[in-house]
Image (cartoon, rainbow over all chains, first blue to last red; front, side, top):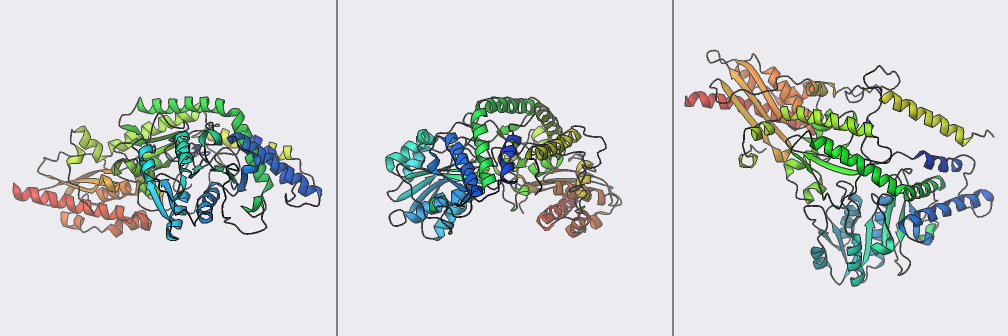
Length: 410
Length: 168
C-alpha cells in the first residue's frame, strides 16, 4: 500500500510533460557505452576515448539536425534547467557593460524565472510580461517593453503546464529588428512540433532529453554562430564543450539524447497524428459526459499532447486522490508545496477557485486507446462523485450565483 | 572479464516491463509482487473517509430544527457546509450532514466532524477542537488548516441554529 492506496499493478501514466519513458530503441543505443565502450570522450590517447568521442559527435549531429542547426552550435548540458541558466545568466553577464535589461513572460518555467530573479539581485532589470487569456504573448506589449539596453528576451516555445505554442517566428523577427538576443526554452517543443532555428530566428535554445523519450540527466543548449552569441560559462573546469560547459560529457546519456532526437524527427508526423487522435478522444469523452469543463490555454495554438482541464466546483487534489489509478498532475494549491495555486494559471487570469480545479493530462507516443478510455471513465466517475459532495455544485444547481456570496474569509 | 550481451540484458528488461504491463491490465485481480508496502500508513484514514464519506447530503435549511454552517472560500480552495438537526427539547444533535469543496484532508475532516457531533449536545459539539480531528486523521502540518475549518463549520452550524431559534 502506498499512501493508503491499494492496487494491482501500476497506475497508467498520463503525465508526459513531467517526464517520459525511455524509448527501448534509445536504451539499445545507450547500453554499449555503459558496458564495454565506456571510455571518456575527452581521452585523446587511446581507442576508448576515440570511440566515445565519435559517439558524442554523432549524437551532436543528430540533435542539430532536429532543430535545423549545425553540430558546432550544440553544447551538452545536464538538462534544460542548466541550459536556461547558461543562456540567461551567461549572456547577460557577458554583455553586462552595455545591456542591463531582460524581458521574459510570467508563464516561464521556474528555472527561467529564478535565473531572472538572480539577475535582479545582481542589479539587472527584468520585465515579466503578462500573457493574454489564451496564454499567448501580446506582441504589442512585447514591443512596448523593449528598451535600448535590453540584452535578451526569453520566451518558451511550448508551455509545460498548458501546452500553448508561442508565435516564435514573429517574436524572432521583432528581436532581429531590434538586435536583441532571443532565447527559447524548447524542452517541451523539440521533437514534438517542427522546429527550425533559422525560421524562428532564435539565438539560443534549451533542449531536454527526458521529455522526448530520452534519458534523464542530459540536455543541450543551442548557441548561434552567425551572428555569434557569446556567454560567460557557469561551470569552471577543463574547458570542455568549447569552454562553455566544463565537465566530462556523459557519453551514454549524450548518445541517448541523440537517438531520441533522431527517432523523434523521423516519427514526428506519425506521433503528432496519433497523439492528436487520443487527445481528441479524451476531450470528447469527458465533455460528452460532463459539463462545467474548461480547457486552460488556447485550443488553436496548442501542442496536442497537453490537455489542461478545469472541472468547475471540484477541487484538484481531491480529484487526484480519486484518480489514483491514473498518474496526472494538477495546478491546484494543495498539490504544490506552498498553498498557492499554479502561477501559470493565475497569469492566464483564471479565477482562483478555478485554478484549484485543474488537471493536466499528458499524452505521448506510448499512450494507448485503452488507457485513454479508462482515464475518461475514472475521471467522469470521480468528478460526478465529488460534485455530489460539493456545496458549490449544489448552490449552482439551485440557481445561486456564487459570485454574489459573501464568503467567511479566514 | 565477463561480457554481458547488451541485447540479452535488454530482453530481460523488456520482459520485466511486459510483466508489469500485463499485471496492470488485469486490475482487480490478486497480484503478488506488484503491491508495495509502505510504512507511511497515516493517509489510510483520510483515504477511507474519501472513499466512504459518512453523512454526505443536505437538510432543508429552512427547517427550524436545522442549523447550517458555511465556512471557507472557493478562492482558498476550501469550502465546507455542515448541517445539524437538533432536537428542540434536549438541545441534542440528532443528525448531521456535510458537503465539502476541498482536498482529501478537507473532505475527511468534515466527514469526521459530521460523525462526531451526532448524538451530542450542541455545547459539547462546539467544543470539539481541530487538534482532535487532526490527530485522529494524522494530518501533516500543511493540512492542519483543514481541521480548523471543520471546527469552524461545527461552531457556525450551532450558531446558525441558535440564531434561528431566537428569531422564531
